[in-house]
Image (cartoon, rainbow, N blue to C red; front, side, top):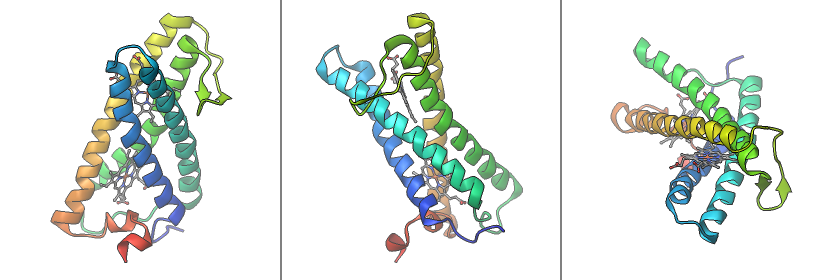
Amino acid sequence: MTPRIYAPSQKALHWAVAILIFVLVPIALAMANLPDGPLKNALYEWHKSFGLTVLALALARLLVRAARGAPPLVEGLPAWQRQAAHASHIALYVLIVVVPLLGWAGTSACCAPVMLYFTLPLTLPVSGGMPVGEAILKVHQVAAFTLVGLVGLHAGAALHHHLVRRDGTLRRMLPEQVKA
Ligand code: HEM
Ligand code: HEM
């Protein structure tokens, strides 16, 4: 049966993934532009660990989504907006899995070991060394910037619903405590 509302777990996972992405993208821009040194190395480690955490949370999100579904879009939207909403949600789900997987695979090829939070080694068995690693990381970068662009459109659409259309779209993704 189609649910009427997002489950608390769906809201928590949505915002946890969003916050991690808002933190790890600026970290990526900083680490790519800093001169070599301990700060750059630390930022790489945080970027990779936050990225792997996004991957785990994204898989959990997909499981909850498959088990529970999602509430129907608000009434009264033109067909093109309904299609755009569905397509962008699917693309966001795909990208929050594919982007960290590419980062993980590329780093495993070029720069093993991949450590989770400086402790747990989690290197994937990807051979080919630096050339393969660099090629995969290039795709990672392009896919990541595509994700950033799509998140911008998605957040803009959510704010448009809230401020211009004044419907319940944004509120239904907010925790009950925030809405009260
Ligand atoms: C949702 C998750 C992720 C996002 C949104 C993301 C985003 C980005 C972005 C935007 C860049 C480009 C920085 C620039 O060149 O200006 C980047 C680079 C990089 N990412 Fe990620 N990343 C994610 C996950 C991961 C993971 C899980 C790993 C590895 C375990 C990883 C490893 C790297 C590495 C090594 C680079 C640098 C590539 C280079 O030096 O050219 N990323 N990431
Ligand atoms: C990295 C950041 C984000 C990602 C990856 C993301 C991803 C998603 C996905 C995949 C859905 C569809 C959920 C489903 O139907 O199962 C969704 C829904 C939603 N998101 Fe985001 N989101 C992000 C950031 C944001 C931000 C910043 C806002 C608000 C400004 C926002 C507001 C919403 C709202 C209101 C919904 C519900 C839409 C509806 O059900 O009609 N999201 N998000």
